[in-house]
Image (tube, rainbow, N blue to C red; front, side, top):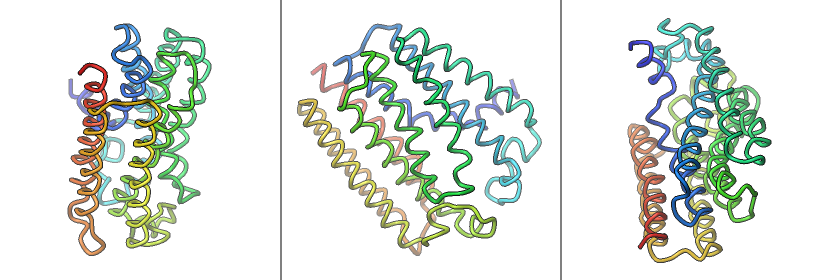
Length: 282
């Protein structure tokens, strides 16, 4: 039981709240409601397995870096609560389960699964050589709505590209805010986060710009899919949350980053999903 709890802490299971609602959102729009129970459960499993693999691989690859950072030195591997070998086996196990699960969806989902897996694992390398690592993380999460859509339709349609792009910029935007905590550490270690390269003020501007574009993309997605009143109400509330998020984090006050990162963005994804669901059932 202690090992299970430690694994859940390592992969930050509570952060599933970011990607899973958008995987379900892609599924809901493709099916114009809730699809059959088999597809619904398989989409959830695919999202969990892919995310488990990605988070564990990040912890495995960054173990030495985490050990040097005061903020992360108590993570599972640096603190010695989990071995690197155990975590690597966990990554491989979840990667196999992810690809195997897509087989039961449809041929396109199965064929694209290795590409999706490569993207979510590759993110962990990017901070070592590019300041666009935040966008790669966004792309990894942006796969979720496309995956949900493909799971239902077996096709890749232009509408879901807008949704994936919106998720990519949303995640990249809040990840930039989150990385402000490590700006000095990243500089000292030669890591390529955006804040470590352009500073706090410009990073805040980029994050706000990304989130402004997110609202535009979601609005255009709603227009293309002929969404009803409930979708637009949800988008209005979610947009207000993004605005509130950027009032919490200021150039001279980064004390509320955790609240902005987890609480606000967690509500953002859930609100979009709930009101989209209402869009088809009310």
